[in-house]
Length: 197
Image (cartoon, rainbow, N blue to C red; front, side, top):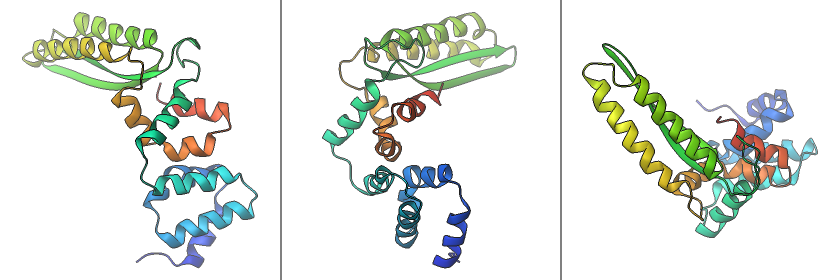
């Protein structure tokens, strides 16, 4: 049974501003209509930024390709979270790493956001680690290590695209609410990309 509006209000009023902003900017699409209106009302009552209310609306709309590129560019112009460089636009990659111990092989993938040079370094580091530590498992070590080396090499080709790659656009699409809420706050925009490292 869903909680009543009064119960929701009591619950939401207990939240500090940060938690309320997180709900508004990241979870709005999962809330029912009455709960959304209640969150908007509490945001106004607390005198929080109108950008937060816009973040709710953005999550409920269908994002066009032009809007997605606009949000992507907001993040791509930020300093690199690895080297702090501002000369190249950010993009995204996935690193694949294999570590084996005789009968156990661990194959892991991680999303990274950085400038193209730092992304290349991340992929190269994953390849080196896999090449040194991946082969030693039976039977999957050899198979997974070969897969990781090929995968990282392919990902490096996407690090230097002039436009955001599909992985970066997917990352942005999942965070349009937070980006909209943080549009005018550089440090909050940087937090969006920094927390995955």
